[in-house]
Length: 124
Image (cartoon, rainbow, N blue to C red):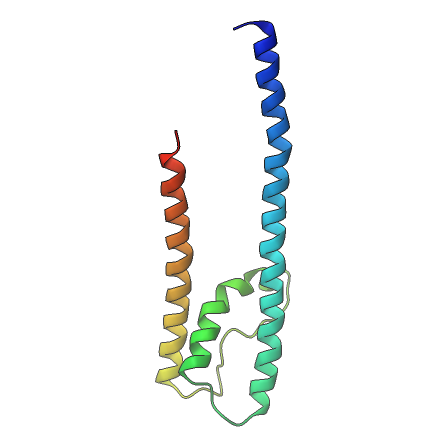
C-alpha cells in the first residue's frame, strides 16, 4: 500500500465518521421528540377521560400499555405521565388490555431490533 492510498482511506474514514455521528444524533433527537409528544398526548387524553364517568376498558388499557415505554424520557426528567388508570378502570379487562399492549410493544420493538441485528451480521 502506498502513502497516497493510506491517506485516501483515512480521509474517507474521517469523512464518514461525522456523518454517522450526525445521523445517530438526529435519530436520537427524533426519538426523544416523538416520546415527549406521546407523553404530552397521553397526559391530555388522560385528563379528558378522567373528566368522564366511564371507566377505562380494554381498548384504553391496550393503548396505554402500548405507549407506556415511550413515557420513559418524560419520567426520567421528572414529568409525571399518566401510564395506568389506577382508580377508574373496569378491572380485569383493562388490566388484560394493558398487559397485551405492553407485550405487543415489546414484541414489535425487540422484533425490529433483532431483525436489524440479523441484517447487520449478514453484511460482508
